[in-house]
Image 1 (tube, one colour):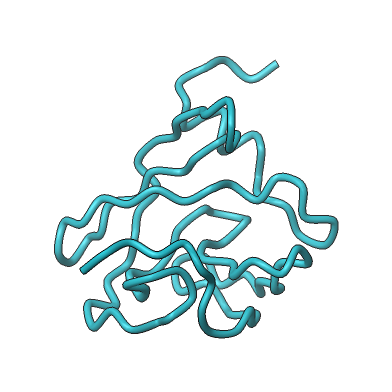
Image 2: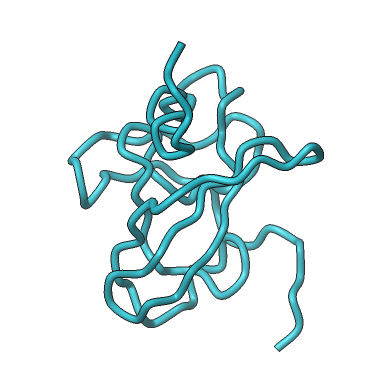
Length: 112
């Protein structure tokens, strides 16, 4: 299976299965794949937005990385199958951006 960087599927809102927050679609046109409140996700994609992965396990945010090119990257681990994936944080979404304090907390850096 080769990695494709094209977005498939639709950018729809959802209710977070971890914290219950109502999550709005991203305004940038990208497909939102995690809750901006608690940063949890679901293991649903084979490719971005396709929702074709049968696992459907909860993805716990276990850390963050910083990329000079992409900014903050949230690292998730699936509670069901152990898969580890990385997703770009949505800190610039005008409607519902990711919780920056939680991202800093995951980084292990002190909150200023």
